[in-house]
Amino acid sequence: AQSVAQPEDQVNVAEGNPLTVKCTYSVSGNPYLFWYVQYPNRGLQFLLKYITGDNLVKGSYGFEAEFNKSQTSFHLKKPSALVSDSALYFCAVSAYGSSNTGKLIFGQGTTLQVKP
Amino acid sequence: IAGITQAPTSQILAAGRRMTLRCTQDMRHNAMYWYRQDLGLGLRLIHYSNTAGTTGKGEVPDGYSVSRANTDDFPLTLASAVPSQTSVYFCASRGTGGHGYTFGSGTRLTVV
Image 1 (tube, helix red, strand yellow):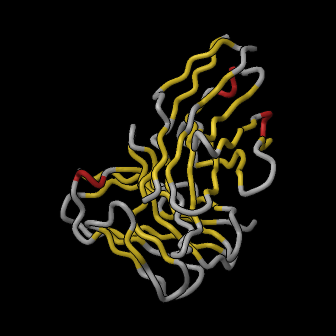
Image 2 (tube, one colour):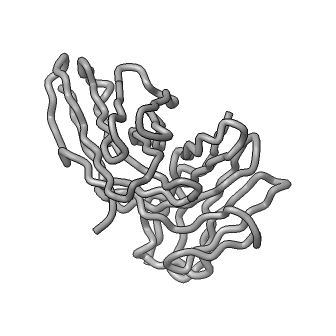
């Protein structure tokens, strides 16, 4: 069964500092990994995805994530945090095994708080 | 603008009542999904449909039903609402062979 873990309920960083939001996953088959962001009372916005190729993926708003197969991780990073980055972040995984269902399974979410 | 339309945006519903959440997409995506979002639990898959005429159960299907009569529409029905179904519901779709998921803006449902 597929699963995603985001071990931190909340991450606090100061503006201008680097940020990391952690994500580990478990799938059978090739993992396809995603990060989404949700601002208060809004829907989900796509940030980036890893399908294949370079392990370092660059996405929207200066975010990037590194796929690490041996550690089954896909941590979200940004070199310099902005107060406007404060939001709820979700990691998600989809696997295309023999069932080929493409279901997207989400982690529980991490609240990022960037303080001025 | 291509995308997913969910209706209603929000609803307060008396326990025991029947309710259908509507989801329509205009991208001709084959796969569609219903999720519920609850604090601390993330988004959990309720039901999905890989193509018109087929549906499947997700992680938390109890108390919900879906149908997929055509490609565009994927309604979610609560036959007899209970307070534990208070949540924000998101509909999503995915195109054939693609890895891009499109999400609707959500329906906030309160069951009292």
